[in-house]
Image 1 (spheres, rainbow, N blue to C red):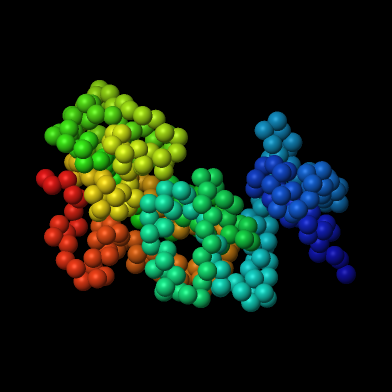
Image 2: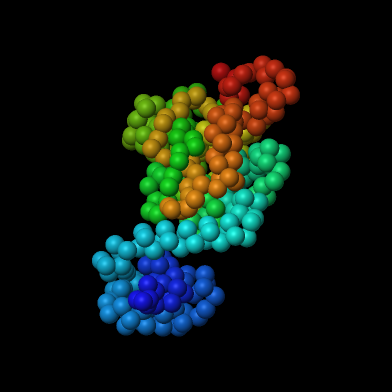
Length: 319
């Protein structure tokens, strides 16, 4: 009988990881072997298959057409194996490994995750907060929440919210903003990581494109948010992320003018991964919690306690 696996599964796994990541080191880390061992896996696999799998370039290893065509099946196969192993272990629905960015974690999730825990005490949530794109095909990552266009390779993405955005600032800074033209008179925080378009907002607000907006520069989105709260200037922010700070008075929306952008927050899962019970629970909770959070954490708390909010679902600029 012909052996359906002419090369060892470890070698096949190494091929799949290197093809996705373009380097030997990620495969070595995941398999717990040396980079040299991964290189040997690839070389021997090519010898046994009788075909070259990679183009060795100065920028890394690039899968050749035959491997590129087979890669989705290889990734789906290893994902299915990981799911099957989780089922055998019997604890696949007990722990939810969720990867998120720092802004989503600190500005939204950390204030609400306890509600999910109360609803689902049988699920332990383990957060991986990272500015980098975590590989969602890994067996130890169930899902993630990412900001962008939702078109990442190798994942299934479902929009959960966060598409609307507008300028925010501390109340003292807002005192200097009678019109959008006044933005030229105050610092405008430059978040180097943002995908939110000042140009699109300016066009809707009618701000002359020739007006120069300048201010402190930050390479970390969470620090840029803190800078706005600390009265350092005006920041462009997603309404979903600024709602809590607006609700408790740390920030205001001086112009009350938001625009709808192409980016948003997406629940993302590695393509081919099975929809587990814990993932379905998170998906249902987000579908309820994200709309409910539009007015901020304090407003939610008042609503749940049955206390009226005299301002309603509005910012606190007082205009």
